[in-house]
Image 1: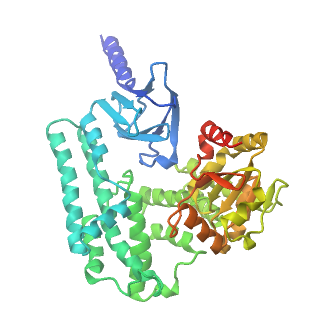
Image 2: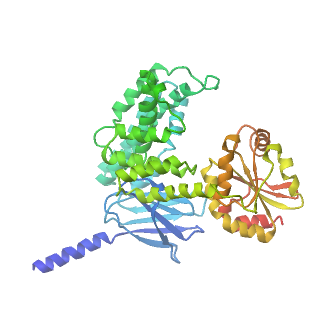
Image 3: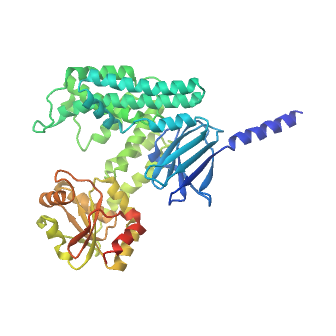
Length: 491
């Protein structure tokens, strides 16, 4: 009898663990679903701890539920992401209609109502959210009341769903945690948005000599309501931003300036990485410290500025945490920085032509040598991460342009201070074609022609034929066949 009971229990356990997330996506040109899982319980999709699954002929896929602890996963298809809370042994049915501009999502299973309600919450980037509150009420006391009101309103909905048993206690805890840290980050951003103005040069139009007293008193209000001591839940998506603002703005800048010690060790481009890293160490410990330091290195390296200081910082991190679950995600970025600096020592290739940037002051002057030709133009900058992400598609683009006798022109929007980095990135990303870095006059002329004359947004792509602009907002290299078809119209 014992053997029979044990066998039954084993089969039952296997059945529970065999539950799946069934996904159906209609109207999407992409047949691949990428599932991004938490790392060490942390909800941060950029770590990209992922697996890929292929939709079948019925546009469906059964994804095994391998979660050992409750948490959020991301389902990515055709560049669009859906976040879903999953508990061990749980089954879900997710139907996505991608035929329109906005995806229509239906969910069946445990916590479905909570997941769908979460999708309706107004949670833009926390700094943008704080600016929205300050536009409604420019005082700290008034703005923080608006924040608290929205926090309670959002949590009350989950209170109701829990009382009606529409969501599980685990989902409720996660939802309340995420909302709490989100509004914590928003709350401190109310202050940092104002305090930042005191750090500007006096000639800056938004400069403010001192922080208003109500905002200065706000530091204590926020950190008392949302303490960064005791048990900290690093899994919350906005925990890092809240903790980083606490360390950088409050601990490393506001307090030292108030105490008169800031000038003894101010922030500089050379020491800023160490100051952040050590600032976390001075204020956190345990798993929270490991996560904060790891994510800080990761996020800075993801900017693709290739600072060698980050490699040294990562070596220090690895010495402290040789078995850290975050190492596999930071290590490739550190290797990329090393490779970047090795590549920078090489000479330019014969297919990389640097135009006389200093003497080119208008778009007409720039494209004059290309009359009689079709030109694909990439406007980018060394600081623009989305611009650099598109370079991954250049090998295929290069073959297409060569076969069609189309010229490639890269216009860097960088200023003089980035001249070396601009040249180094041309080598590292193997950007074959013609290159120019904008003068102030050329940059202004481009802003006048393609934007509002006051600012610009990149990446942006153009197609020019025989000296005339035929497409002023062309498709990106990542669009591949659609881009090639667009260029082919003007051959």
